[in-house]
Image (cartoon, rainbow, N blue to C red):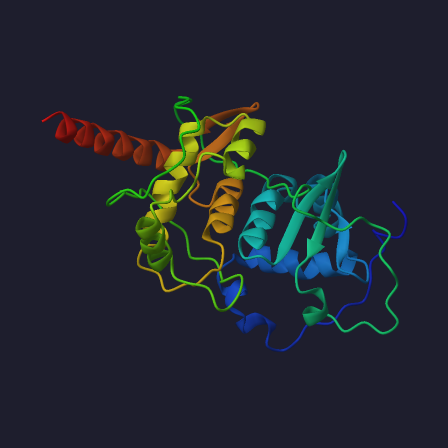
Amino acid sequence: MGGSLMARIRSIKPEFPQSESMGNVSRDARLTFIELWTLADDEGRLRGNSRMLASLLFPYDDDAPALIDTWLNELEREECIVRYKIGNQSYLQICNWLIHQKIDKPSKSKLPCPDDSSRTFANIRETSSEDQGRDQGKEGIKEEENPTAASVEAPVSPTSRGGQTFRCWLDGLKAKGERAVPEDDPVFEYAEDARMPSDFVALAWDEFKARFANEDKRYKDWRRVFRKAVRGNWGKLWWLDGGEYRLTSNGQQAMNARQARLSREQHREAA
């Protein structure tokens, strides 16, 4: 483990409680974020096993092992942290580390840094519902009209400046005749590797589009944001039951709405 789990003295800036990202997460997630700093090395990295983190950060809280993944998911959704794996080892990177901490004579990290191939996202565990594991293949996702959303969460903060709104991005794709999510997009590879039913990706797209259609958030790469939404289960559409994906009540409602819409479209085409 090296020195990666040694507690360190860290500072908190006075403006930290007023930050937008902290306003979008729960109080427990805020506390978790601050406590993660004490375990992070001088480059903002630490080992990321959730059970280990629960025991180190919340040694007196019996419910922490069951809840810490939810808190970490909140922080990852707001791009406060990155969780990733190298081989069988889990790690965590604090985003914008040098904004949060000013470190004199920093030591070089002994932990590997994250890259696109090592990124991994935990699925939020939800209450049980019926399984809807249909596989409709990787056909890509077109821009559709008026998707119905069952549930959406607070928007994430923009990843960068100089991007475009979701609606402008979709309009640009329509003008070029491009699919919003092409069939070779990495999101389908992720779903296949995670053994997630491919129609869950389409369901997540419905939720994603409904969530951002009228938002003024701007991103340079909306496909990348959508991949994060699927991996992070932003809409709380599914949960894992012994390695098998099942829809939550929110997901079941969204699935019913999607199937009803597709049925109406088929009838219009047949008329």
